[in-house]
Image 1 (cartoon, rainbow, N blue to C red):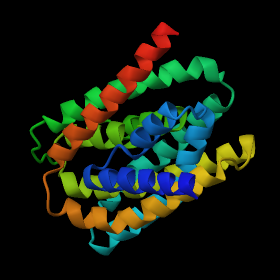
Image 2: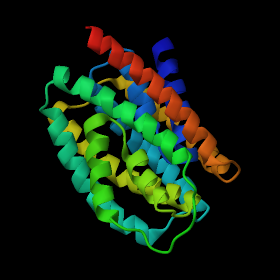
Image 3: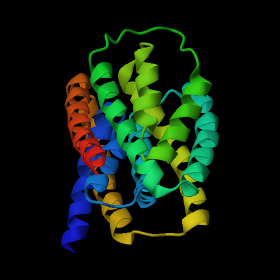
Length: 246
């Protein structure tokens, strides 16, 4: 029960932040579970099984307040699903001793990316470029590393000065379809494992979803984005140093 409560807390905090800034659920959970010594494949599978429910809760919350751009949604969903399938398949057949340091380096880059995005000057433009490649890359890296959909897709779209709140709502909604596809692949390859991890993350994430959608209308996402970037960067730098020292 104590372990379950910890996973509920992790899921709640991660999805609350993700709902506010449109990124970092996977990277936060992956960072913490990596420090706890959980294998990379179980981390990614656990994150994506739980995200079926957390992203659905987020999507319904954004839909309720009409915070979704359906034209943008259609463009990124298909590419994200294809990228997610390929990423899940690659992760399922890659050695864990090989993938772990790669994930750590990846998360360090994500931490830097979040801090950089927080410093961007958000202005609105009428047209966004490279939507399909962005969706594909986001889905692939998200499955392979247990996180990255939000930083890559939201970060790239917001980096092109798309309106922040609606971009976050749209990308979070698309993530439901991407995550559902990835989870099916993981289930077919490794089955259903880490029940306590998945259950805790689902409960915490679902509870946080409507609160996050409310908060997003009230605060500047740059502050949270910058802070979580620092947390992820420091956490994974520690892991990387430990790996180098052996």
